[in-house]
Image (cartoon, rainbow, N blue to C red; front, side, top):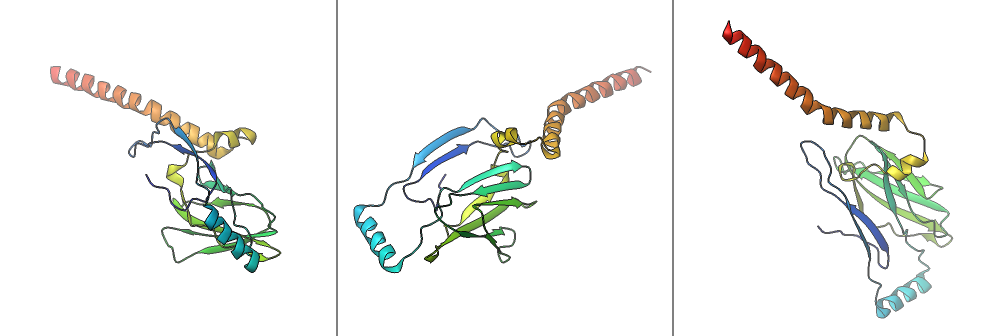
Length: 193
């Protein structure tokens, strides 16, 4: 597995799990925590000189992506003295249709039925707009619903339906087994006549 587009000198916490494609059952997740490397002193000096002479604003940092329901993603990031934000996002089904939104707050809620998205964020300070972040990838299939977030808000119909569907997956094989046994018994009785 390779992760691209990570910011320098940033802490990351990632949960990795496997999914059975046919049943959509998930394995137990494994948490990974790591910090990306700091830039060297030479590159820090060059960055400082560039910022000093060209007054380039800071980049958006600490991007947090949470799946809060089956079709809702919450994206938030640190404010870092920005007074305005822009997020551009697009579905991988049609990369020619990019949406651009200007936001007053450092969060964005994406409600979708599509599975895979990419997005970029930038912020504005008194010096102007920062550069966009690297393209970040979101896959609904690869994200679990954030249980901690759900425990802090009221339970919605979406989460109730999710739990009901889980129970159907557990009880379904027993119903099929009972029907199969009934068919075998009826076939045995019919063959005796």
